[in-house]
Structure formats: C-alpha cells, structure tokens
Length: 139
Image (tube, rainbow, N blue to C red; front, side, top):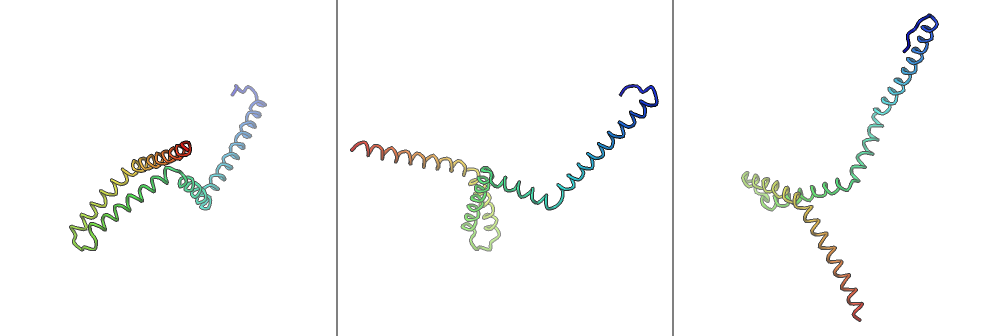
C-alpha cells in the first residue's frame, strides 16, 4: 500500500479495505455453508457408499478378499478335521494353532498357485488349439 498523504486518500483507502473485508466475509460464509453441507449425515453416508463401492470394485481388493476367505475356510476345515467334537483343551488349542498355520500358508501360497493354475490352463488351451489346427491341416 502506498503512503497516504491527505484525508481523501485515507477515506478511499478505508473504503477499499472495507470492500475487501466484506468480500472476504462473504467468501468465508460461503465456505462455512458448503463445509456444513458436506458434513450432514446424509451426505457423509452418500460419499461413504460411493467410496466403498469404488473400493469394492477394485480388482486388487476383490482378489485379497477372496484369498483371505479361502485361507480362513481352509484353516477352519483343517481345525474341524483335527479337533472334531473333542472337548480336550489341548486338542482344541492344537486345532487353533493348526488353523492359524494353515490359514497363513494358504493365504501366502494362493496367489502363486492361482498364477500357476492360470498358466497351466492357458498352455492347455494353446496346445489343444494347436492340435486341432494340426489335425485339420493333416487331412
């Protein structure tokens, strides 16, 4: 701001500052209204559902969820196989340990197994396609 040397410049400067202040107050009020609107429970739920849907549709999340479910299922079945309906506390504890170990092992090994299975299937399809082409050309 320049140096003010007379009363007219002072009044003009004050008007400019008052105008600037009212504009800033309006901007702050608008910002507060939009912030209050975005924090209403209905909007929070709507935004949460949209984000949850985007996350759920992500391929990585679905793969991890599937791997986790298969790991838990394998561990649970193994525990039921080891323990059965036995009320013995040591056997039940052993069942929990075995379940945890199997769950971890399946969870860690499942992506590699999926890759190998996919590769085997694609190789099998390619071989059968090549055999069909060879059979057709040999006639």
